[in-house]
Image (cartoon, rainbow, N blue to C red; front, side, top):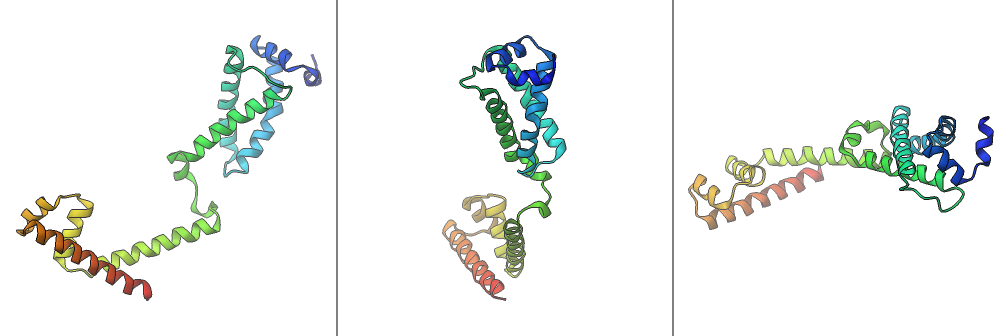
Length: 187
């Protein structure tokens, strides 16, 4: 049967052909909706390899749901909308994933995000500089409290101070850090 004839099939007839694993219909559907999914992924930071992987996953879910009766068409474009929605949801999951975020090259980010990232990196360098200028007791106290998550009780024992003295010293050290950071950022 020529591919063109599938265009005239009703949604019900296409669904019946999918449920019967009609190879020609499945191939036609696969090829018909691929370009739209490709366009969506490429327009949203994806590449051709991701398009292929995503579409195969989406098509498999689509096929499984149609065969099992989970999908019921509500109009004459329901199949197209359904496969697109599956692909879109899978793509959004992928974009939100940690693995995807690690694979995006910084140069491919929009300019405003790159600038924000550069600002953060400058700020971190400034914090490190301000921290380095603190006295040894302040550096030790802040490191143990904020990074090693030691309690005031543990810190009091370590430094040989009362808990109130430890709390006051932590506050004073943070103030020194803030003042040093302000002078660092004005430069």
